[in-house]
Length: 384
Ligand code: FNR
Image (cartoon, rainbow, N blue to C red; front, top):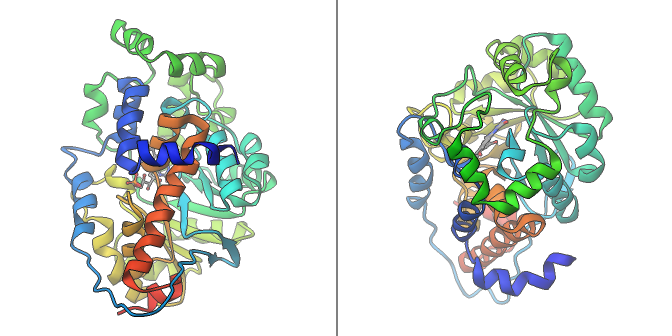
């Protein structure tokens, strides 16, 4: 694997996700950084998502002889090398041109899932062959069921097997940071944006080579492909109408596991199980939607006790270390996803980025499992 050539160098230069974030910030325009990093409102929840992990501690046990940590795991009857995956990120090409292609190839190599967003900048048809059998597809539920089914057909035909319905975007949120950074929809070529591009020549070169980021999956359904039209289309035709009957219809239509993403309330988890969904994705959208919500990790154990073994639990929001993954698994998650971290990796190191992110998280997870005295994920989850 090409990445292995650089592993020692990267491990010393970028030992933590925050090191990659710092490098990513230098390599991409301010507006792209603000888009990736932003929370909502004054971003209290963004900080809370991180801080809440610090309160979860383990008491280690020793004298267990030689321990080696095995991170292999099965989810929805499919084996993964590790309980981590790449969460859906929209408008991905703004962060790094062709990021979806880089992430899909990496997921296939690493045997971890990659979830493609409805509003990604590459299509399921282009990503599907690269992601192999590691593809999940995320749906922002369109108002029209015909459009929903058309998107699902495309995802299915492109090889995506697990469907994620995002529930936590009843409407677009107020992202003050991206407004301050000068992000406009449609994008406007102001002198400060041009200067931003000149200061980031590698990003600009790859962006010009691929073409400006466009929502290439959904633009097929809009009558015009310019960004203003497509973003208006996204606002008008995707979201705002999701209810349990809609979820039930998607579950009936999709041949494969269906997971509802953005759940924070145990009653919603109960409802999702009642209608037969296979997974509950506990998340607050990485602090990007409702600034008044609790940290996702704070809701995990109460949801896990409601769910029991009736459905699988996926978790995200604020994961930056293997120790965080361990905390989430211990509190009841079966699988953990990371959004920003993988994009920091791509923006910092291009095609070598995702492997290094996975390495940092896995190495830390394995190390902490041994420090604690457990050798596999089942033992970790069974600890009390
Ligand atoms: C997201 N997220 C997201 N979720 C989703 O269901 N569809 C989407 O298109 C997007 N787009 C998106 C863009 C950006 C820039 C970010 C940072 C996030 C949310 C994402 O899937 C995930 O829930 C969070 O990123 C998890 O939090 P961390 O890992 O970023 O802290």
